[in-house]
Length: 218
Image (cartoon, rainbow, N blue to C red; front, side, top):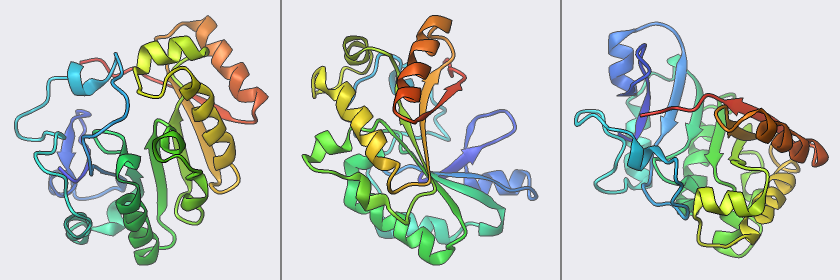
């Protein structure tokens, strides 16, 4: 699926299917453009969650920008309250295509709320500052903080940039505040109160907001 949402049972469904099932009420539209990721997180649902054979987020082939736009053009935009660029992998792995899709959304409806869910490692992936590229295209950027210490972060994410990735991710988050109105760091609620408190302190020291989200088990 390219454009999808969640149904009343909190299962992934094609956005059009969701509207057919429940034709009223605005909902969030999620954009899935890649399986690729520069992390291999120990908790990733790609390896832990059993996916339906019908509504499966795993892409057999990455959609082109034109294919993603064509899917969007089929949707009823009056029922979309927010568009979230997330992917079943890391969306910034297709950075240029991602930016093109964001520009499409803001051109079609400048009032549409947009969000990017990311691991915050795009600066390390491309060897340059990427936060300025999102200016005017995003209302919110949500970055996975995951842990309060670099070594623990690397053990959890198993990314290919080493322990320096933790500070790289935090630096990206701080820079993003200059270009995106809402920058939110996230952790899951099953890491323990002490770890959540430590993550909250790290965010507070940098003027960042922390959101504790429910862990989605298989």
